Image 1 (cartoon, helix red, strand yellow):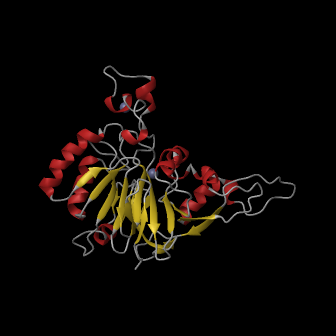
Image 2: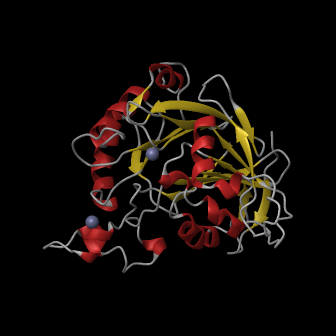
Image 3: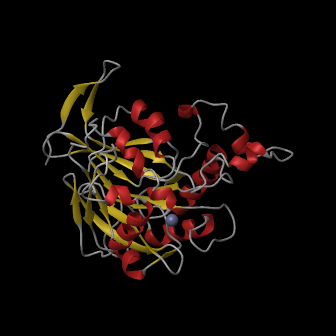
Length: 323
Ligand SMILES: [Zn+2]
Ligand SMILES: [Zn+2]
């Protein structure tokens, strides 16, 4: 077990050094604010998007980048390792907003849930958080992904996959990555920066398997950002009834009402929470239909009724955890 180190924080108070989850993004693929609400405002204007550009990031829980989680893992070596789940279209903005604010100096490993644009299109910008070398002479960052995701990324980013320069090809500085194959299989856990992850296959549309991940020895967290239907084996694996109650479930919810073919929406998300019954839940992936303060008031009542504390997460949220 890692010995807890007491350090003095910037404000002079002693704090216990431990791991933390940092929500880099909690929004849908088009992110919030919705551009159309700003360039073609309705009458009355969209209440969530219209205030989105006037408040500073740390005071605006209704500004949502693509879903992404950063695990600040304080492992047995007594060192912080920074594990990034997904690198979407808004990655650079997330670095500017939250790496600075939470003093994140680097990314040690990357895990991909799937290969959609809002999960991978920021891979080119990983270069910005890697050591500078004009000749690409640095240690590549490991990226854990399925074979299907690898094939798609090889088409989207051939220059990030290419191993050697072709004869006559100039050296250009690009993100250096070390691709590591993982399987869509509950029984095939893998290690990233010293932390074990169990892949949680879920349906993301009926034609597509996406991964969530279970991690944490002392505090069990499941992160499931893109799901329309749970496979029974996955649901059982993370359910209280299946014998493994989660301390925290971070779960997809896209629209407030109705349903969607590739994501859970609010009613289905709440139903899933009742079935899985974690000790606590935080929701991610929301569109501009969700108003952080208003909907968290509703969720406060729901939580009391159902005995499961659940809230909408927000970009920049940092939760200290003992993994
Ligand atoms: Zn809007
Ligand atoms: Zn997706």
